[in-house]
Image (cartoon, helix red, strand yellow):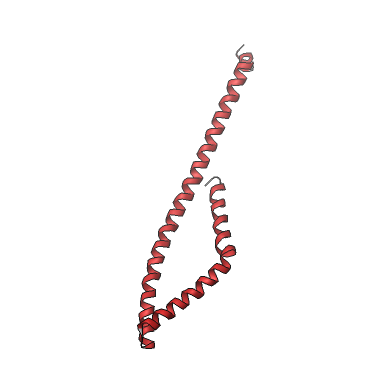
Length: 117
């Protein structure tokens, strides 16, 4: 008799509802995990970028003074460093889509869609 009760409409509806609720909860948790991993990874990359910017800033000041000594004029030394950064900036702008934008987009998508980790 209990077997017949398991397969009536009310029992089947309840099981289907429980299955859907569990499946929805699993999807929510999977999304939360992906977002949390992506956020943590992005935060660590931001901190690393800040440290690299400070390093580059002080290295640039040192290079400016060094070239200033070589050229016997501090402002000429800083103009050399500025010209270098202008050249690097132009190269970055020209190559940004293929070497910066697309890899970052691919990285974010792979982090969000990665399952089971």
